[in-house]
Length: 333
Image 1 (cartoon, rainbow, N blue to C red):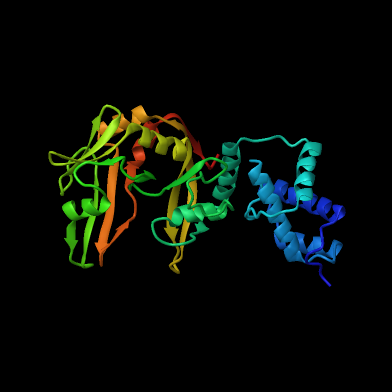
Image 2: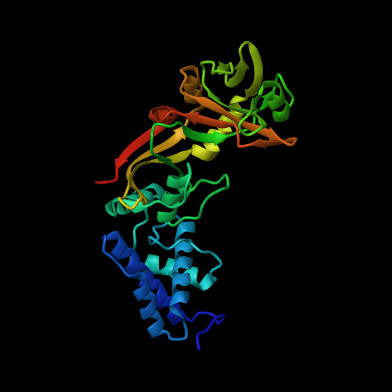
């Protein structure tokens, strides 16, 4: 009978840790490994444990390594709630075997190069975020809806086409010609006849859009104008906080895609643009040059205002201008 809740013995932990790092080493050598076979073999050695329990334990080890910002195995998404003894054995094993540490970006580059070696991979999910979801899936990291960076402190972004790259979403520091987003929509929105709602969807830079909205820079602040009226304002401190909290260390992954004869969609990760330390001054200069856009995404139906964010975006080919340090890595090397 398989054990379910009994604490793992030292021998079980030792064997699972050793097997995990053997798997990791094989993956780093680009060898094909059957993880299920490893779990079955461990279960044969320790018949009180099922193969599935060893898979979970491998995911626990991934969680320990991820938390310590150390290399972890591909295809084993970190899973927490592990026993403290497991972490002790993992860290002791690393120390006893003299494994060299790596920076998070080195770990990321190594993982991306292994994905590039696999060529085109099936796309996960749908919609505009499908490439980001696919990247997170194959990197074996949880989907991220929090404000924390995606991968060991590095913000991940995918680049697929010439569309604008979203940097962050922030509410205005102050409304000037209205008191809140509802009044912004009421005063400056339009009737969306197709969806039978009041809406305000537009994207603009320093050049007026079709509705008359445009950006201007006033010292360290950015003002949203409609013709000659100042509508709302962003403090430089608000923008700088958004840049540093979300993009202090960022990785922009270039993606190519293809469609098979049977209609399935695939993508491949080709290059990595690694960027550090965004500059508010550079951001403001980009805004003055027309390389920063703000999107309004407001609508109202049945008295309820929906807001998909005040989105700050930049052209793909202008991303490097924002950072003090950039590095382009070809993942085929």
